[in-house]
Image (cartoon, rainbow, N blue to C red; front, side):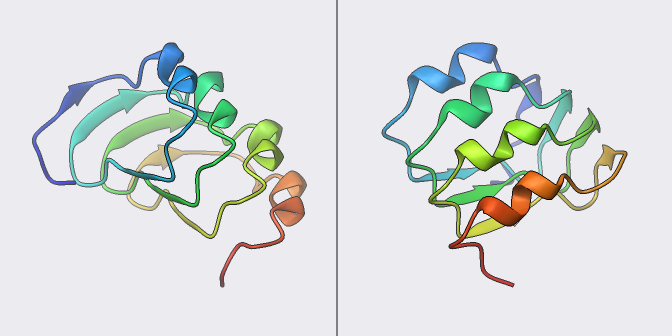
Length: 93
């Protein structure tokens, strides 16, 4: 977090499948959320707020079955919250 990172999240981030925490908030990252992000099935905490992400949140978010916290505020993400997010049974309010 808050490291002045720029650019996009690479699609191959899904290869880091042992990650439990991914905190990229407060940077200058942009682009859409790559499908590889939803391959991080061990992920419990995903913090992406305060960047320049655009697009929408994929219905594939339900693949993050262990997700407990998700932050995407302060981006340019549009669309509706996918109903698949409801399948993340550990998600905290």
